Structures are given as C-alpha cells and as structure tokens.
Length: 136
Length: 70
Image (cartoon, rainbow over all chains, first blue to last red; front, side, top):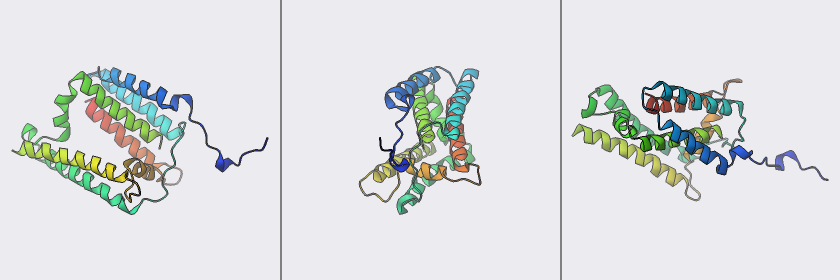
C-alpha cells in the first residue's frame, strides 16, 4: 500500500470531539452549573473545575486544533469598534460607581442570572465559547 | 435616564459584536471572524511560553467566574 505524504493526511476528530458527543455533554454540564447560585462554594468549585479541565486540554493540545491564520486580513481593525463601545460604557459605569442609577454590565446581568434557565443558558454560552477556544 | 443610557450602550456594543461577526462571515470579507482573531492571538508565544493561549484562557476563565460564581 502506498504511504500518503504527511501533509496530505487529515486526522479524524476523536469520538468525544464530535458534535454529537460534545454538544450533549456541554448541555448537561450547563444544566448542572445552572443549579448553583452565585457566591456558593459549589459554583466556585464548578467554575474552577470546568475551566481548569478546559485550560489543561487547551494547553496540552490534546484536542485537534483548527489551523490559525498566520496573518490577519486588513479588516481586523473593525473589531476595535464593538470593543471600544463596550469598554467605554463598562469603564464609565465602573468608575461612576452609581449603583442601579448607572449600572455596570455585571450589575445588569446579576438579576437575570438568578433565573435557573437563564443561568444554564449563560453556562452553555461560556462553556461553548471555552470549548471553541480550546479547539483553536 | 442614566440607567437607560447604560443599558442602551451595552446593547449597542453587543449588537456591534454581532454585526461585525456577520460582516466577517460574508463571502470574500476582509474582516476575520472572531474565531480567526482569537486563533491569531493564540499563536503568540514568547519563547516556549504560549502567552496568547494562556492570556485568552485566563480571561475567559475569569469571565465565567465573575458572572457565574460571584
């Protein structure tokens, strides 16, 4: 049998990296995370545990990574626009420290995150984005 | 009034993130997607230390702790 040049071979993703496996796992982890209220020991342990495992996976490169661009296209500067707008409001509300009269983003999010379903959805967003970073 | 301004500002910021991502995903766009931007940042290394990966992982870990644990 003829051997393929290494550059032309593509490693198939491992079973647990396939969406059919990792999506239900992320949903299940999010539903569990949504049960833990803010400031609880369980929430802290869960965030540090889940984040720690994902960072370990990402730094040891045990997950098949997508190829990263060697240089950015010229339009990358457009990303500064949302970052600056968001940063200005976060900075201004933080410095003003005016409480509910001029709230920071996290102060606005806190009451929403008290709902278990919203909290689970936030967990899903956080974990999915983290998984996306690990695969980069 | 200031509360409405803050809420409006954050919503505009979030909408801009969505808008730029949508523009980036168009055929032939010169704007990289947020994923590509993160991938580029994560390539940054100082010697053997993957500074870009550590920085982004650390930032996202802190975001999770800030919103979901405290």
